[in-house]
Amino acid sequence: MDKTRRIWGALALAGLLAGCGEEGFKPSALLQGERAEAPATTVIEQRDVEAPEVFQVTEPAIWDGRPSLGGIWVAHPEVQEPERVIIRDTGSGRFVVGALFRRERLGPGPRLQISSEAAEALGLMGSVPATLEVTALRSEDVPVTVPAPAAGGLDAVTPIEATPLAGPDLENPSEDELREIALAGIEAPAAAVPPASDVIAAPAPDAVVPTRPFVQVAIFGDAANARRAEAALGGEGLPAAVREEAQGARTFFRVVIGPASSSQDLDRLLAEARRLGYRDAYAVRN
Image (cartoon, rainbow, N blue to C red):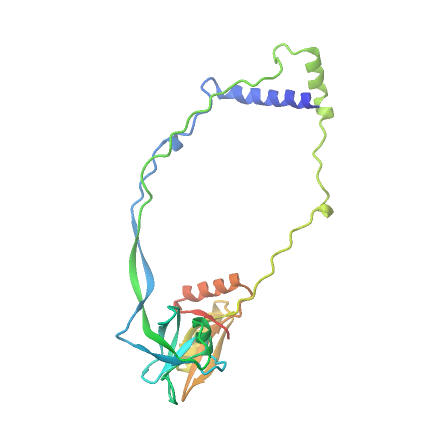
């Protein structure tokens, strides 16, 4: 059997090598040429920049230890309009991005109040003050130059010369070789294929539900604007909803999409929200 296979392999290779000619295999002229130098391009990226001229305080802050709604937020009595802010713990260096609201009622203790999710993200304990720096954020269009690929050709390719393989004498085969060639088609067995019932598919990994399965796309002070945003997102096939909540004497309306069934689904929802212009979207619990 092994001898039969060697004979058939030699016949196939001999025909292949004969078609290559005496010069052997040659690399493609395209591979030997140099890469065309592509020009550098400029793209516009939207980035968050800190805007301390809009709002910035560095003060002790406190979480009262109770669960709160609305995701990640801070409240301060000097706020005029809701803002998007970056919240930094000056002690640990941790930071998180969230919303800023006006605190209507002041009690004893720090003026800066934070939500339960903000405290969790920063690693703060309930009723234990911590000094936080809160700075407003603004989106800014920044031109970014994408460099061209490095110029230069590919590494030189060494041609592979055709080398005759050891095999039967094709011009004057022996009687045994002729007999093996004649019988090869009868003796070559078909490759064994396992039945479908024996093939066991690997189990799919369990989908991990994210701890923050919703995406908050916007916060409105007007219910009609929130409903319009909800309808526009629904028109894009996204599961949108409006959450009506109160912070002191003010009522605001959060527009969220979700819930996401997995981390991949959450990434998809975030990407869709940002594609539709909600670049400040972020994940929340509810």
